[in-house]
Every structure is written in C-alpha cells, then in structure tokens.
Picture (cartoon, each protein chain N blue to C red):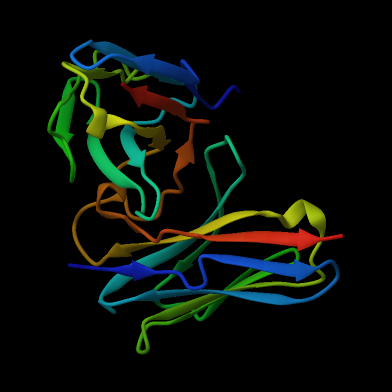
Length: 114
Length: 115
C-alpha cells in the first residue's frame, strides 16, 4: 500500500493564480482531511470529508474548495492564491470519522505564493 | 477553546540519554491524546494513542503518560538514538460525538540527538 499520496511536493504560484493540490489514499478510508502547517502554529484543519460526496469546513476554510467524488481522492483547490496561503499542506485520512482512529498523513506540499 | 502547548520548542540531547517531552492542554475534557513524529519534509506518523481512561501507553523505547487532571502528557524516550531526531507533536481529541476533525495539535518539540 502506498498510503496517502500528495502531489506536487513543491509549488510556487503568483498571487491570483489557481491550482489544485492532489491527495489520494489506497486504504479505503472513509475520512479524509486537509491541514496547513505554519511556523509557530499547530496544524490547522482546512476541510474534511467523511465519505464520497460529503465535505465540511474546518477551522480555516476561506480561499479553499474541496470535493470528494470518490473514496480515494480528495483534492484541495486554491481559487485565487494569496501570499497568506504560503504554507505546508498535509492531507490525512483515517478509517472512519470515529474517535479512536489513527490518522495517516501524506508527505506534504510546500506552497509558496509570491 | 482547547489550547495545546509543547515546551521547549527545541531540545538537543546526547545520544544514549533518556529524555522527556512535554505536552500541556487547557481543557481536561478529552477523549484521547496522540503523539506524532514528523521528519523533515515528511508527514506526521502516529506513535502512540492514549485513551482518557488510560494512564500510559508503551511502544518499544517510547512511553507516553497522561494526567488529565493536570492537563499534561509526557513522552519518554529511553536510550535515545540519532534516528530519534525529529519533531514530536501531540494532539488532543475532545469528548464529543465527532471524530478526528476535532483534533487540536500542539506546535511540536524539535528533538536533536547528538552522536
């Protein structure tokens, strides 16, 4: 199993550009989520999904869109990139939304917005 | 709002020493607490998960303890090795009907083991 796969690993954007960060998992997990990690701050939840066709907002959703058309994929879309979105983005999944499920993380996407 | 603090932000220790990493949280109404390891340029890997009813969990050279009443958890690493160098994060899950979307993460302690 590859686990959670994120692409690309690095990306540089100009302000106003749009892009999609890809996330795929091969563990048949119901729950998938996107976090951003900024220096001096803990991971912050952007969006999450508890199954195909179901998504919800996390703590910092503004400027980001998600969709979940399949169990495996959970892409994160930046609609109009801003310098404040410079961060490291992590996708994570777990078997279910339940409280005892360990999270499995991808290796991250480092995004710079100029 | 739950706040999770990890102090110090960075720690250097000679190889072979035992060490303790700290995690403090402000709201003791938690369901569980997890410790994660993050290597540079990599994602987080779950190390240990402690239920609120448990006092500790062990995995190899790692031992995590939980004291809900004082809002503290510690991660004890025995006989440290250079391969233990990484950032260690803790995360708490509140008592609720929800799941991992309610996790609150600490900012981590960057551990360096000096050969």
